[in-house]
Length: 116
Image (cartoon, rainbow, N blue to C red; front, side, top):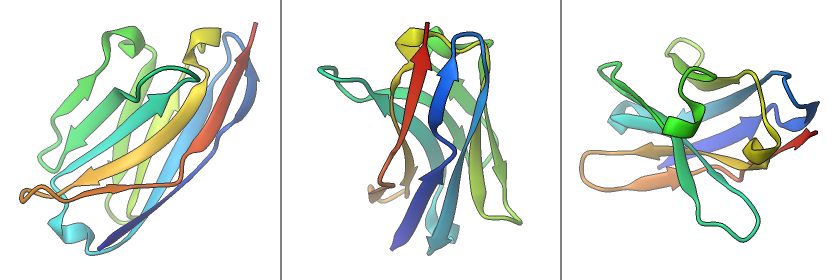
C-alpha cells in the first residue's frame, strides 16, 4: 500500500505561482510512475504531469513551459511547481502513484483556484 497526501493548494491571482507537494509513505519502492492529475468542475480528470522512476517526464500540452514536476527521493515527496497560472488551471489537483503490476494510488486532492 502507498499513501499520498497533497498540500500547497490555494487561491492565487492569474500570473502567480504555486508549488504543490505530495508526501508519500508506505511501499513507495514499488512505485515506478508518479503523476499529478486535475479535475475541474464538470470535466473529466486529466493528466497534468508525470515522472517515472527513471526520471522521464511527461506534460499536458496546456501546461508545458509553465509547470514542472520533480521528485525528492530523500524526502519521499513529489512536487508540482506551477507558474504563469491561468484561470483555466482552476481544479482539484490529485497526486497519483502506479506500480508495474497495475496498482494505482491516489491522494485526497488539493484545491487550486486562480482568480482573473
